Image (tube, rainbow, N blue to C red; front, side, top):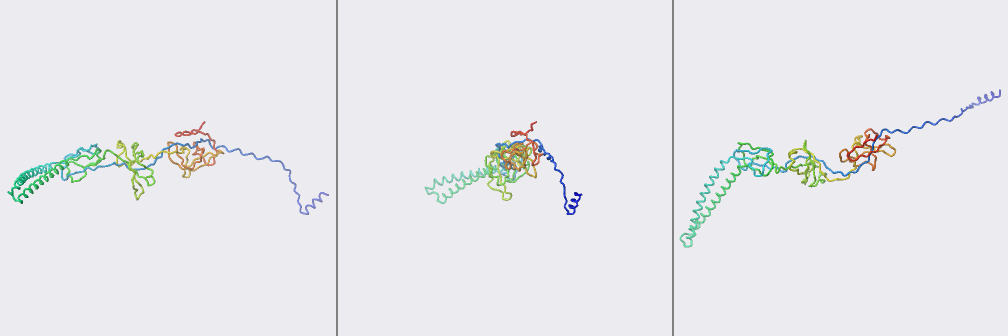
Length: 375
């Protein structure tokens, strides 16, 4: 009865009494196990090697000098053509022959005129000699004396004129034989037997001395790196490499495309693999410098950039953007972006993402080799 009264009073006053259940000790949640490595990778460090510095360029193969051989006499008919395109010739070798009938007739006419002039000169000299002998005695007048001397001088001048005309016709006779101006190879021929050509008509073109050159086009900023004497390795379409030497760098730059020309002398045997007019690519040797190299396999392309994975101290990988330079075999030069003494992922780099935990197997290959995972 007493208990019920207390309960009634508690309810009447709006007071509620709550009884908290006993608190029991709860077990702590199990710890999450450490993250397992995503994969096993090999790593290496960038290796410093001495690499040659090279500059690539495009250009055209051309004749060092091409001589034009033409007709030195006009209006004559070609009777012989003794060479064809591709023939090797020597300086002074007869390449073609013109008909010499007209020239021989002119020579005979000149000989007759010369003999006549000599006869007249002989008579004039005899008359002048007599006048000189009689002039002191006063037998002949001063006018007759002067006329004799003038006739003698005129006759001698006519002899000299006839001799000069004779020399001209003899020169024309020699010009009926078209001769090579230098040693070389015939690059083109327009001469045909039976053709009557005019004075100065081109009959042949000759590559002087069988010498070729490579003319490379470089932008103005690259021209200053090239010096006479630099070696150049040149390759044409389907042709083996040929080593040339820079002869000259053009003193001017084209005002439209801002490029300058570099002239490279090619060796005498270059014509075995290169021909004038061919397009060829070459590399200038500019010396050597130290390069930091990593295996090509370690470089991945992400978002259009060259990047490498570097293993951090916590075994997680971090992605670094790098700038690439030269190539040597399967190794690439890193010019910037790679921390010093970084452990670069080699095998497995293409399957990683930034932040992955990896199991590292260190295997540093030598330049020219590839890292291999140890079993």
